[in-house]
Figure 1 (cartoon, rainbow, N blue to C red):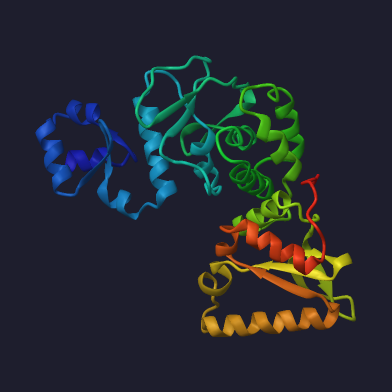
Figure 2: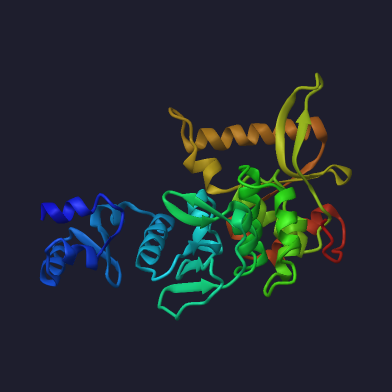
Length: 318
């Protein structure tokens, strides 16, 4: 038992390693039944306590480690599977498979739970993150647009730019050498829409919904100043010329980030006071939307257009 627990100082231990240390398949099965080991894929195990505490992204990282460790050739964690290595959101991404790319340009045999990609990897496309070969933030941001929706790709790319993991200069330079590759039609659109002023998944999704709905382009993070020129508020989105602003109300604002000693009611009251101050200073109307509104974009866009007093246009954000 102690020898097996010693092997678990590595995040993932393989059946072959356990057998080599003198343990049998019967030993392994007994430890799985006892809740000491968690089998995460055929022939790969982790400490059950670690697995139980891990969220979905952390579990995917463990799976990626197992896939790389079991690989018969060098594998680079890529596409959606690389995002957790940058703490980037995986919203809208399927984590059913571990995405890897092969530097040799070959495509290995099909394997359950693994998706191998054959795209060209340049020298700067591969970095080391947490002890594994992972595609760079620049390559990852571009790659995810080829295997996800444009909206999900925009969420990931915006995060990576905002957190300075990559830059627009680097993205455009790398995209220039791959824009004729398969599945990159959405990549150009995402590059046109990305805006590092967008601070959260909710704001990014709202921005994309406005684009798709033909709503005039808003100003993200618009500053409101008082009579002395002091910034008293930043608005998620604003249409100054139309006298309207929009706030995305996610759970974080009212539940997850309640200051110590305060209640949710205190937070709501402060937000109402903030809205009253903004209205007093600008004379503008406020639109509020939630996660639920993003799930019914047609009705939400219609409400926004009606408040703005405009008709939809062909999507043209640049």
